[in-house]
Length: 345
Image (tube, rainbow, N blue to C red; front, side):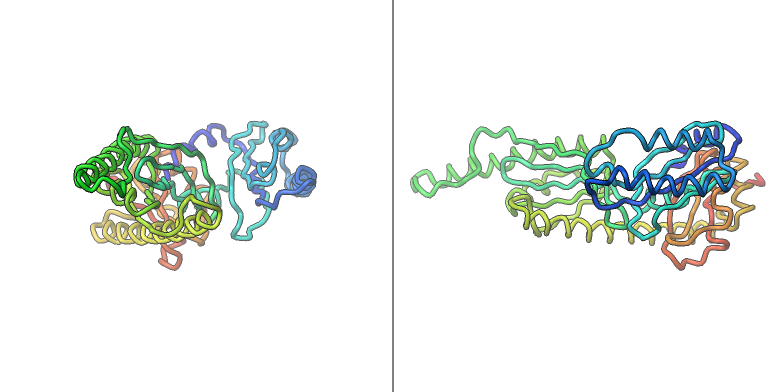
């Protein structure tokens, strides 16, 4: 995760109110429930010294009309003491963290950035011999599954891909034309998918659908596709049951992908430590961030680091990326960093 996107939060030196609202099941009284939950958190923040300007900024953000499930989606909001709404983003609290609020000198963004660092951007491709349905998804480590967009790619072959049962005299010629049609369609779809991958930068491409279309498309995908491709024969888009099976398979593949990514991060950190190109502990990390030497801030999944809010501020302001390693890796004070160069020159 690129932490530089959060740098604007720290533009002013002032205290912040940080609010986490967990997702709840939609209902007719959803808006009222959100209001009551916020009123409880508002009282706690006020008792802790939050300014009326900060509270009013969150009041306004939560009062905006929302419909359907959007009313009950989890959210994280950050407002500064002067009343600047610095952050209002979706957040999935399925780990059971529940609602929370904190008034302090810095935003408490640990849960938010950890979830983002464990999420995966997925292109789900359900291929047929003539076309393909492509969904852009975001899947979190807690199995929150959000479909951002869906598009259909159609092949250009004029000849149908299906082999007729008649015409024995010209059967080979008919079959050859059908095979060429499948190949041409696969080329067209592969080109469109490659372009889409370049624009959306997925972490994983999941290729599903009927075996003929899936195999043809896989053979046409370039080796330089900017994401690994996982192929599955489970489920599809034929009916609700098939799509449910496919969704379960996507979650399994994403879980494996994220677990491997965290393991790879741990290996990279060990390699950097072996070359004396890493530091551990809050003060050393803050020093490295202050000199621009910190390339990657490393945190453990499921483990809060000491002085985490300060670490995230320093990392965001120095253009550092965030990566997670598996829980139990045993980082000193829960944090480490990979360096661009030695802070001592």
